[in-house]
Amino acid sequence: MKTYVALFRGINVGGRHALPMKELRLVLEEAGCVDVQTYIQSGNVIFRSAIADAARLSQHLTAAVSRSHGFEPRVFVRTLAELEKAAAGNPFPEADENPKSLHVFFLAERAKKPDLESLGALKTSTERFALKGDIFYLHTPDGFGTSKLAERAERLLGVDATARNWRTVKTLLAMAKDSR
Image 1: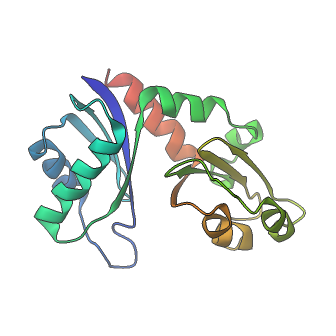
Image 2 (image 1 turned 120 degrees about the vertical axis):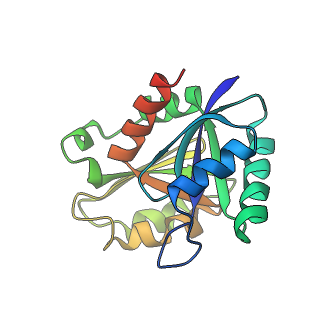
């Protein structure tokens, strides 16, 4: 069995698609996942599964939530090795001092035609970003919630994504390593 991290997009946000983590854990266990652990209410799950294909596993988890709760969340599944690579690739190590200043966007796939020029035009003088494969790093020391770049990043990248702050990424990585 392989260790995975599933990042559920859009659950428990603004009162829509409510799915308490206890229920999410049960849904994954019923779907055949083992050693299921959740982290905070935004849909972060560490587990092990015999399904070797991450794309197939993502579809399997989406279908399981649809059957149990009536909506189909977007689920981004990463292996432990992929999460380690994303963390090791962080080009903004100063975010360790302020982990909410860095957000890691996990892309559904590599961006084929990202509009880097428009992304660059939106960034403030303190913001920085880097696109590395299917990971987009966004450093916003003045705040993620007020960043026009953060607001438009997914559209300008041209691919579905879900973002997690640096603290969450590091915590998920530690939890996944412990669950092996």
